[in-house]
Image 1 (cartoon, rainbow, N blue to C red):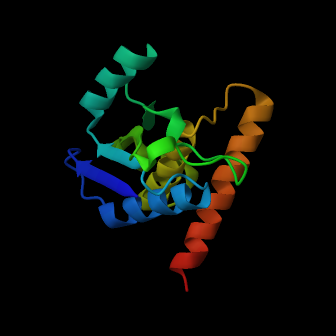
Image 2 (cartoon, rainbow, N blue to C red; image 1 turned 90 degrees about the horizontal axis):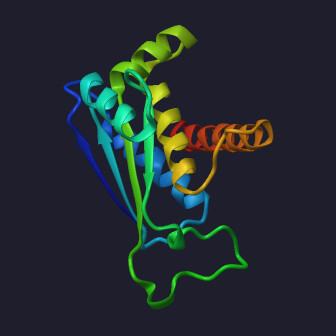
Image 3 (cartoon, helix red, strand yellow; image 1 turned 180 degrees about the vertical axis):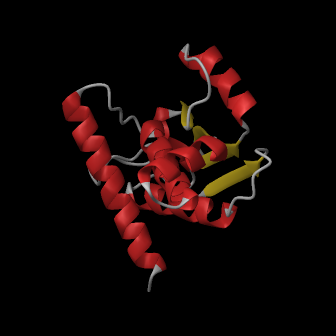
Length: 157
């Protein structure tokens, strides 16, 4: 699993932990081990620009996911890996640590915990999950909570 991370946010972030939670989520979801993922941490100004350009939103958001190749997703044992075993580009996750810190303060937990949650959230979006409808939201947020809990339990050992 190839995961690239670039911190262009100007905020000090434990990028090793962000990489670890992304890798854990991808492994737990059965994603092709040859898959590639990019994680970019950006400042409020750039996130606002991306949110406006790609989502039609105003102001910054916490996470954006840009899927690239849905053929790389392995949704279970009944499906095989893409033919040829070629590495597949899952896509890009863009995080805004400043927005994450504000959300973490409002929720009463650490900024790092919020970034981990947003990383898993972004991974699930790349894998085709969404939360537009109530049932989709229950499924995605339940899965997100389980992935975070299992990741945290492996770190506390």
